[in-house]
Amino acid sequence: MAVGDASIRYLNLDRIEKEAKSAKKFMKWGCVLVCFFGIGILGSLFKINDENKKFTGNDILSSSDVKLTEEEKAMLAPYLEKKETNPLYMSCILLIPSAIPILISRKKFREIASARRYETIFGSDTDGIITADELSTQLKRPTSKIFAELKDLFAKGYFQNCSLGKEGDTCVKIDNALGNEVLGTGFVEVTCKNCGATNRIRADSHGKCSYCGNPLYGKIQEE
Image 1 (cartoon, rainbow, N blue to C red):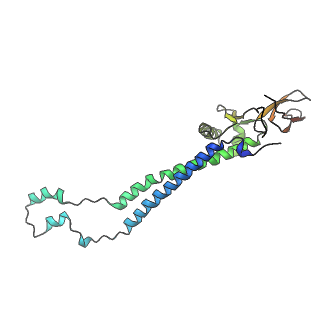
Image 2: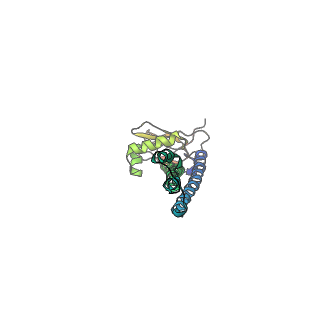
Image 3: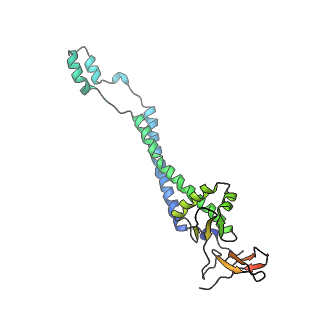
């Protein structure tokens, strides 16, 4: 079978490159943020608090040198209390959202890997029609999950030269070959000279009639 480089037949390489660059940026900034707040947590854990040298508003109220009535102490207490935000607590809170860019990056890389895996299946198909059952058998996954994933990947523009069908028997259909087809990307309909049956085979490739086994050739039709 005369086929071209699989990576340029059904994958939209511009989209792949764009998503890969975006994923790397998210991963970079996510790691920077996690490291930044992680260092903040370590700094908070090892921070030395010299409690003996602290002199807070409560110390003033309890000092024997300050003569205040209980009513006066109650009035001054809200203004003299020293309210501090625990740096360890704040670092832990900020560490959680800082991991979001890393999660986004991992999701994008998984999408790219899935698109490449599907492209391999598309490139090895013999009739240009990939059914849900075929995908389920090869990927060992439920058809509903496969269709949902493909729907998302097609919507984001990861594929070209093929289209997604409705959920059911036909899942993905490879486009028909054009007149300038040279890579075996699309398919053409060929009538068997032996039995007269119509077969759909990859353009510029050799195959066999699915009914009688007679040799066939996918000649590209000029536009």
